[in-house]
Image 1: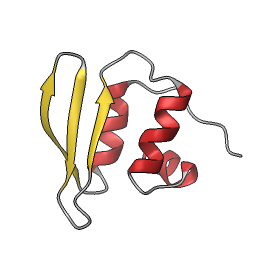
Image 2 (image 1 turned 135 degrees about the vertical axis):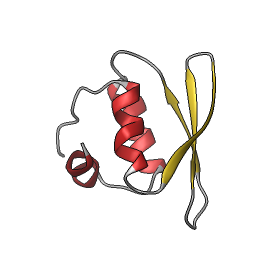
Image 3 (image 1 turned 135 degrees about the horizontal axis):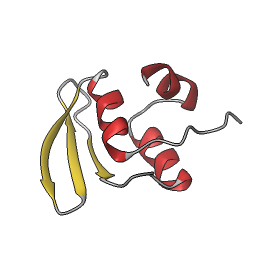
Image 4 (image 1 turned 90 degrees about the vertical axis):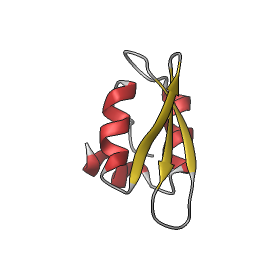
Length: 74
């Protein structure tokens, strides 16, 4: 299993924007992203200094990526 990088919520959003996700809206500390290309997915990313490892792994899985692919996007 590949180690997850320590990243902020905003860094996660920048990485996911490279694979057709766009910031849809933000409510409080939660940023909602929508995927522009099919399949149209929606993700919620916390706007924290450092996203918890389990939360980050879940976001990566919901985005349809592997940890290696996500690390390449950073």
